[in-house]
Structure formats: C-alpha cells, structure tokens
Length: 231
Image 1 (cartoon, rainbow, N blue to C red):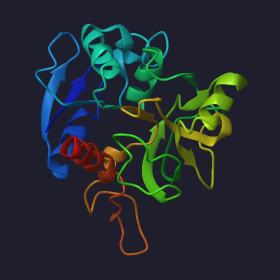
Image 2: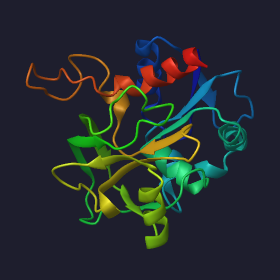
Image 3: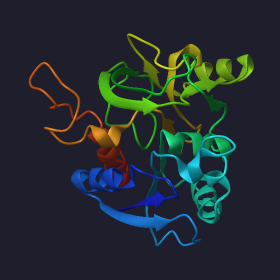
Image 4: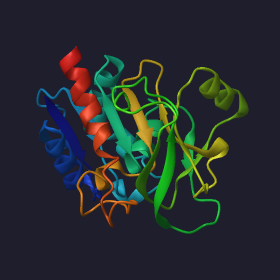
C-alpha cells in the first residue's frame, strides 16, 4: 500500500508522518503542494505544521493549493484521507469535514500528552481501535478549538461522526470536547492530536509500563493498511 504525505510550505510533521507510515508496514510517498500528481497513492495524510504561515486562518490557503483539488476529488471518490492538526484545519477549510478550528480559548499554544476516548471505529483510520477505548496521543496547537453551530453538533453526535473526544481536560475549548471527526463515508478523518508522534517505543507518551513507551498512534496507520487488505 502506498500512502502519500503532502508537504506544504510550513509543514513540519511530514517526515514524522512518513516514518509512521513506514513503521506500520506501508510505503510512504512524498507529495508536493504545488503539483497535481498524487503519484498513484492509495491513501493520503495531510500533516501538522503551519502551512503558508497560517495566514488568513490556519489551513485556509493550503485548502486552495494545487494538490488539494486532487485530494478533494480522491476523498470524494472514497480514498482514505487523514488530517492531523494543521491537516484537520485544512480538511475543514476544504469542506471535507464540517465546522471550523479557532484559537484556543485560553489564548496560549499548548503541548501535552492528551488522553482521548475513541468514539467511532467506523472509519479507515480508526477500525483498529475498540469503541470506548482510551488512548494517549501528543497534542500541540494554538488554534485547536473546534466549533460548529448547534444543529451541526447535534448531527455529528446523532450520526456517530465524532471520532475522538478529549478526556480529563479540554485543552482548547473545543465544543462538546470534540478532538476529531470522521465523514459519513468513513474515509476522511481529522483530529488535532498527533498520532504520528506515538508510533515507536522510546519516543511516545509515558505509560505505566515505561517512560516514552506509548504507541497508541500506530493504530491509525495500521488501520488504513488493514482496510486496504480487506478491500
């Protein structure tokens, strides 16, 4: 399986995402924001960072970059697409997921290991979890507050489209503690925490077993590999 990782000007987690893809057993493929070529990939990751300097709004310019025309077409055709942090912001700016991301309610950039509850496993990127499973994924953002109108929030809850919810503390004021979403088809997932930073023992969050041993993020990447095999 070939998983493309798009680099935008200002991306800073693209190499980590490619490493996560490789550790999961798939082939990472570097994609460039200024091109229209997806190079025959089977899935796409929009990585974290500060695309185009986050001018206008975070993700707003990247959502209109040349390669996003192909990403949007591929997502609408059913290709798995994962947006991480800035990638999540790009997905909502591209209208592949509803709502928006705004500056954290406390006004500060935040970095912490974040507990999450898996709310939906009905997606290409979450099928390896169990519903209700609690995981720990690193979080780092300044504009991670998820917003939507009440009707949209009710629809997301009613249709089971909330993929992850913050536990213990809501780090950014996200409405209804929403940390991540999936689309109706289940091929597009966006979340603010960074699974690509919890894929290898020695470099992830602390666990009760050992320091830096958390690898909950790897399941995102093995999930999409598993779905590819089943299909």
